[in-house]
Length: 354
Ligand code: ADP
Image (cartoon, rainbow, N blue to C red):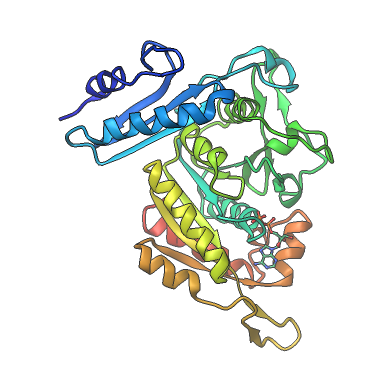
């Protein structure tokens, strides 16, 4: 059976044509893992050589795929590490490039979507709160660099996390029974940041490894929308145990949701299920249901892809108002709209997925 040393030996036969050196000797192979025939690694490169190195990456991936007993290979390019941006005292540190180990956290589960605006953050916040209501110890990490919305949704937009006396560890916030950290807390409100790969990785690494998460049954990660390299690298850096995909029932959104399923397949991350959000609109006046974006598309797609279907969340004014007002509807159990999120949380628990 192929083991890690065989994989390393195969990688040592791949030469970077730019330097003439093999990629193992050049010390650019990072986070190499071999688990049940699935190989993952990262090639840390100079972003200026990304096109050239893509060919090297593809060659390395093909070489490993050809080894006996290998069932899946995920090789990803990342920009080499540089010091973090203006993020406080920790900025002098170089970001380690392998996955960040969180020994007290049982599971890390990403909430992802193929495109923005489908309600990924709403689902992440409500699932976190609903799982906490079921007695689980839950953390919520908002890694949506393009629009961190958890400080607002969890009612913490004017708060800031603390730090320990030695300034080495970030003390997260507590909101609605959930331990919370957001990349939004590291930015001035209203400032636009263009994240370069290494900056992003430093910030994410800090939020995973330098936050006093405490013992958690599950850490929910609200990923940025989309299926690009950022999402892929995040998925690898956080060593996910699974991913939940949020989609609306529209065909267009479902095409993107399928891309998200494929992205996680590349990193050998199990997709725990799909949630259909904005599924049918219930008129607050008469209670009549209107299928604005259609209904049921995600369930049919989940069945086709062999992925569990976790439930349907209606398009409902109360869900928006409560999220935008800082108290997710799942934290208000007497409201009928809380039921859909609580059911999805129970389904995950009953299936042993969380
Ligand atoms: P994403 O994270 O996918 O960009 P958000 O969770 O930020 O999406 O949702 C976008 C907007 O839609 C927010 O204003 C949110 O309150 C609203 N929204 C999300 N889901 C629902 C829903 N089921 N019913 C009503 N409004 C919703």
